[in-house]
Structures are given as C-alpha cells and as structure tokens.
View 1 (cartoon, one colour):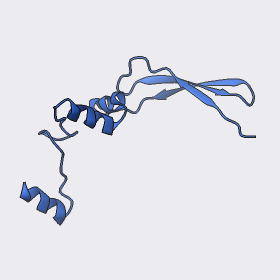
View 2 (view 1 turned 180 degrees about the vertical axis):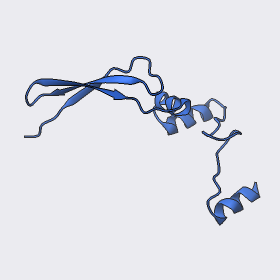
View 3 (view 1 turned 90 degrees about the horizontal axis):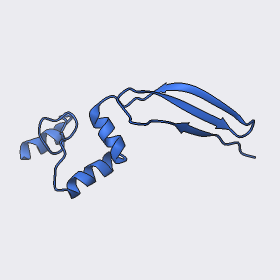
Length: 95
C-alpha cells in the first residue's frame, strides 16, 4: 500500500517573498499539519514567469503577440548572451 499526502497552499495575490501557509493532509492517519513557508520568487521577472506558467509559455506568449520580451538582466530586447568561451565570443562578433 502506498501512502499519499496532499498539500494546499493559499497564495491569493502572490507577492515577492510573501509568507504563505501550507496545509498538509495525511490520509494515513487523518491528520492535518499546518506550517509557514516563504515564497522564493525574488524578483518581478520570476513572478511574471510564474504567472505565465513558466519561462517557455512566457516567451512564446510574447512572441505570438509580436513583442520581444527583454531577457532578464539585459539592457536591450532579445536574448542575453553571456561571454563564456570562444564560441560565445565568436557569435557575439558576428552580429
């Protein structure tokens, strides 16, 4: 027999680093555990990704709408390129 648990988290209007409450139900003994947690969405970009259902849905939704979403941390639209090796540097010089 496999024991399962279910958890409920009431996020309401989610904010950055918000304190939340978790309710964990254990069917094996019928007990409910409640404990506090802190949301680890630390910046607005992460919150936007979360609300969109993830990074990929966020990017695809923006592309489908015709707008190019700036990459997190970049100063211009498009994809942020980090200089990590000769291939990255060569790609950056081709633009």
